Each structure stands twice: as C-alpha cells, then as structure tokens.
Image (cartoon, rainbow, N blue to C red; front, side, top):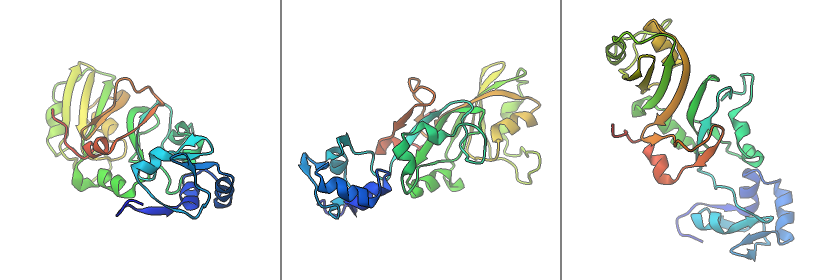
Length: 249
C-alpha cells in the first residue's frame, strides 16, 4: 500500500464507480473476476491505495479499471446538446459511457454552455477543482468564437474592454473583456465571468446578434482541432492545472 495515498475498500470503490452493487462486487471478487497485476483479489473488503498503479493494474471482469475519482474530462460539446436536466434535448451526460453516468460522486459540468453553443466544456467529480475554476476570484478566461448577423462597427472592442458595459436587467457592470476581430462578421471574445448568456447579450448590447457561438479555450487549455464534436478526452494533471493558468497570447 502506498504511504500517504488515500485508500478505499474494493467493494465501496467499484460500487461508487458505477460497476455494480457492493453485493455484486463481492460475488465478482469471490469468483476470481477482479485481478490486480494479474492476481485475483478475492476479498472485496480489501483496502486499496488509490494510485496510478491501481488504475493501471486493476482489471474488473476482463476490463481495465475506469478512471479513479478525481477525473477531469475535456468534452467537445455538440450543438443541440444541453448541460441541464431541466432543458429539453439530448444531455451532455449521454456522451459518456453508461457506467460513468452512475458514478458517486457524479461527474458534473464545470459551468454550462447553452444548447446552441458548441465547444469546450469540462466535466469532473472533483468538487474542489470545480469550485476553483468557477470562483470569480480566479478570473479564469473563457474564449468564444462568435459569428455575427451584421458587420462589426469598430467600436465594440473599446466598449467590451471598458469595464462599464451594463447588461439589460443587471445593476453591476461587466468586467473588461477582450475582442479580437477575425473578419467583419467574426470575432473572438474572451471573458472572465460566466453570466447568463453573457457573450450573446454583450453583442446584443452593441447592436448586433450572434448567429453561431463556439468556445475554444478555458484558461490555458485549448480545444484540440482533432477532438470531434461529441468526443471527450481525459486530462492529465498538468493539463487540468493549465485551466487555472493564463494563456500566453
């Protein structure tokens, strides 16, 4: 057992990871269907250190172990997918393997993208990491590529950067945001807040309308061009840490 590493009973760990009930896990163990480094773990009450070695060496009923608790996923959210159980339409959680959707603690999105916004969203079962990313004091940058109904007028960058823009129905101005023009009707907008439909409402306040919106960056993490819509990727610890880093622009 690795000194200092957290531990868990085998049956509790696998039940919380969605494999089966604790009783069913006990049956699998007694029948020699749970192996660690090729050796059967016949006692479901065995305490195991939650380490990379366990993740690499444990095999459950012929399958490699799913990611241990503390996982962070990068997901390329497709258009039409919702992040909330309260909205109609396919859920982002449906993109995950069925067993992963039964985990406890559950995998949750870090913030949300609305149904008509695509791109980078993170999911995790690590509550501490989730709160660090969404905490206002950390000012984690989020970059969006917006396609607009009308050409930009040229005044938007100064307006968004001013720190004085007030959205309709609110009484607190937005923090400064950065606009990078791509073409007359396309721009990157980088914000550090997560107000309701913020990017769409910012362009509306500037007299324009967003017809397509895609998020491609959170902090120092950029969505890979080869990650297809609907696909997900498990982040390494270094990649997860980069979310809280300011990107080099």
